[in-house]
Length: 96
Image 1: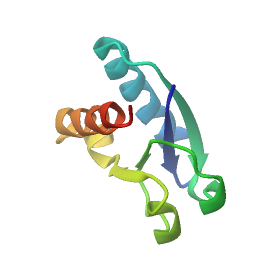
Image 2: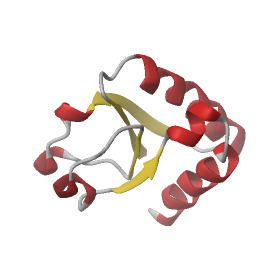
Image 3: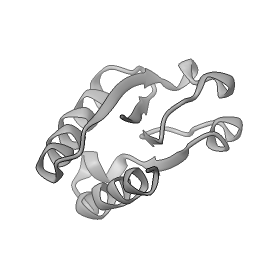
Image 4: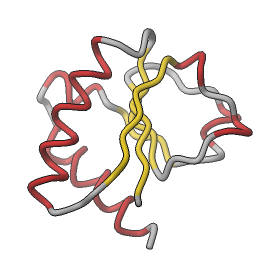
């Protein structure tokens, strides 16, 4: 199953908003994925096993090398949300 990390500063409010949008979109697309909400401080390069990380904060470079990172701000503001969701879907589909 595909795995997504939703990352924000505290791992609570913003990542919950991301979760609602991402889950809804993936459900519409018929894609199953495990979604985990995390604080950025919980990201450790040796334990990253996500297919994609959607973040509303800066992600350390050593983590960026372990999974593709997508800017989650458009999912909060609505500006560019559709394109962001499509990009996440493309990443997940490329991880056969």
